[in-house]
Amino acid sequence: MVPSLTETPLDLLDRQKFVDKMIQVTETLSKKKKNASYAINGSWGVGKTFVLNMFYATKVQLFCQTAK
Image 1: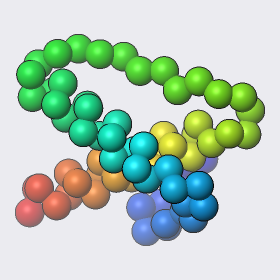
Image 2: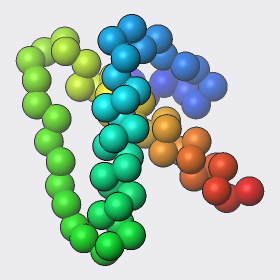
Image 3: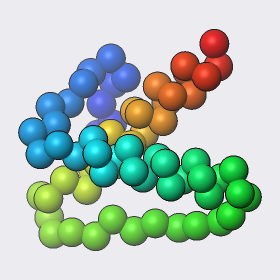
Image 4: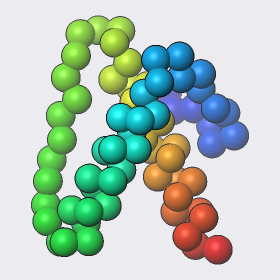
């Protein structure tokens, strides 16, 4: 389930640094017109969906900020 954009999930394991790095890499590749695919591997319960939801929410926030 994707959290609403007004909801801020608790990042107890400080995954925001990883998400910020993912965004930096995707934006760099996008500017250079390079294609890429990503895999987030891990056992059940380690936070893969949490990271993807956080990535999505952060990208939406960045898009909204630049669209103003």
